[in-house]
Image 1 (tube, rainbow, N blue to C red):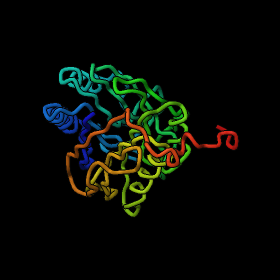
Image 2 (cartoon, rainbow, N blue to C red; image 1 turned 90 degrees about the horizontal axis):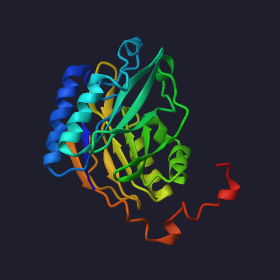
Image 3 (cartoon, rainbow, N blue to C red; image 1 turned 60 degrees about the vertical axis):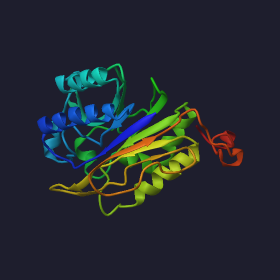
Length: 256
């Protein structure tokens, strides 16, 4: 499968973000991509302030339906982040729209970072979703720093993990190390998409990449605006049995 990572700036302009998303989805589809990935809270831009309470979007909002139509029309899957409103709560969520336009995955961030705890409700479930590419697990930013999250998804059958992010200074290289480690530890690919540039609060550090099941990066790590392209073969597992930690895991020692 061919993947496009949208390493862009965080902009707090929903209309502009939606237009950019639709245009970029069409561009990626023309390049033969099967999947396109946008960063954390992409639809609204990353916000963790009082404003967060006013920008919640329901999963049935016309914004979401618009993206579903674009994906279906272009036969491409899409992963993006948005602040999801459910009754009186706001979740930091990831949505997976499959190539047929169907929403097959919706994940709420389980590990909230910093001031996010003041404005978001935490998710309570690590989910593996059935997609046209196979079984995929979703994570968001701070989640990837906990080995247990990726391990749980892998043990529950995930063949790939997609993590969207809003990682910022001074944590420049932390996620770079984490995504490589999570891929190696679980012998499955990790797809990671982060913001770049400055907003009124943060300086985002990029480092988006596609990491295969042996820890090799398929793209060049960078910290500037870019559409990054790479390919993955989900049917290809780790060839070295001694490096396949998931198969050699002493499950009897751990409470999973």
